[in-house]
Amino acid sequence: MSDSNGIVLRMENITKTFPGVVALDNVSIDLYKGEVLGILGENGAGKSTLIKILAGNYIKDSGDIFIDGQKFEIKGPAEAMSSGIRVIYQELNTINNLTVAENIFIGEQLVKGPLKIIDWKGMNKKAEELLAVMNVKLDPNAIIGDLTVSEKQIVEIAKAISQEAKILVMDEPTAALSEEETQSLFKIIQALKTKGVAIIYISHRLKEIFEITDRVTVLRDGKKVGTLKTKESDSNKLVEMMVGRDIKDMYPKRHVPIGGVVMEVNNLGAEGFDNISFKLRKGEILGIFGLLGSGRSSLVKALFGANKIKNGEIIVNGKKLRIKSPGMARDAKIGLVPLDRKIEGLALMMGVKENITLANIKELGKSFLIARNQERRKAGNWVDEIGIRTPSVEQEVNSLSGGNQQKVVLAKWLESGSQIIILNEPTRGVDVGAKIEIYKLMQDLCEKGSSIIMISSELPEILSIADRIIVMSKGRFTEEYKICDASEEGLLRSACL
Ligand SMILES: Nc1ncnc2c1ncn2[C@@H]1O[C@H](COP(=O)(O)OP(=O)(O)OP(=O)(O)O)[C@@H](O)[C@H]1O
Ligand SMILES: [Mg+2]
Image (cartoon, rainbow, N blue to C red; front, side, top):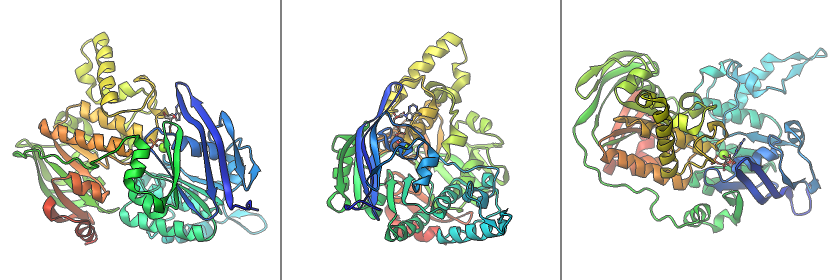
């Protein structure tokens, strides 16, 4: 039974500390039946920690949790599950060597008959139905390891909604999703709401917060700043609450003179795309927009030597290159900030400083001692410059918040002085304050003579920061826009061609 106010969940005065950090300091939230409560806050504000406590992954230092008015001690994940709490985590939790259906039903396999034989057919069918609700065609028998990041995310969502949830928590569920998939997810959320499910929705995308939440709680530095009704708030107000200062210009586009061609791609083809040609100029930010399966990530991988090129050519500074490995791309001064930082971008068990200087080991290799000091200084500079929230540069990257991990990957490539920098969703999971810093940095780099290829599925971002946008669909370029001719509608239309 819900208590008389319809409050399903109350977390009261929750405090949690880690060595060197107070992740949560006396934070309280209420969650009502059938509502969506947004949680907003900068990277490292404590959002994920709060929900990990709810999910039984972390044990709080102090504070109380009430479910349906009853005090409830969550001692571990099993207890959280048994009281109807389901979480879609920020970091993907899919198991790579299992199939889609196995992942969805892990721990709760369907069984049939008196012998309780695992009902593979039934699971595949149910998985197919769940995926159909998300509007995606995924083979339930496909191996997770072969899927893209966004497909994995969809599997995670399908898994959470396959189980009857009373409280559903989504920690940045759309970070890897396209606009279209996000809309499908929102339809599901609406349906769950009408069934009375209470939902906590964490996102850095204000547009989504306004679209889907009923109320918003803002955290800053582990403290609750306040809770507002979404209808009564606006983005200026929320951003101010988040960062503690007024932000005037979300997209500070500067005029950077654009020079000659630095990279020329002719009729390039590889797994996932074909017949791609474009030119990238010095000082330019070239945007690439496309929906899931458009081939944008395959293209990026090919340019970086991580996807075998079948035909066509890449010319950098007038020289034809055979890029067969990321090492060769690096030698050609091409850098990549990948989509899935966990797999492709970071050495999670190493420290912040090793990660930032990882791409430049050769240069630092002169003398061990000098290298160590240089490493620390260089990493320290980046920590200050883009505001990486970490107790020290020695901290294991593993224990940083999601957005701060992203900043470390970015710092690594900024530090490497690459001439051509490819950014695949650079601000995914990054908070508003840091986003602005990243946009500024991108333009600093261009001013210093670098060129940038930016893949982004955030329309406002790509429209504001790119100088030119190429749209991909089904492995091909469908349209090229000068920034003055580009619009949200136009890009979406070209992405569906
Ligand atoms: N396991 C851990 N060990 C040490 N510190 C941790 C651990 N988990 C979280 N922290 C620290 O607690 C703070 C809050 O992190 P949390 O992951 O909750 O932030 P967040 O609001 O989810 O940020 P983001 O938007 O980047 O995901 C950060 O300073 C983070 O470094
Ligand atoms: Mg988080």
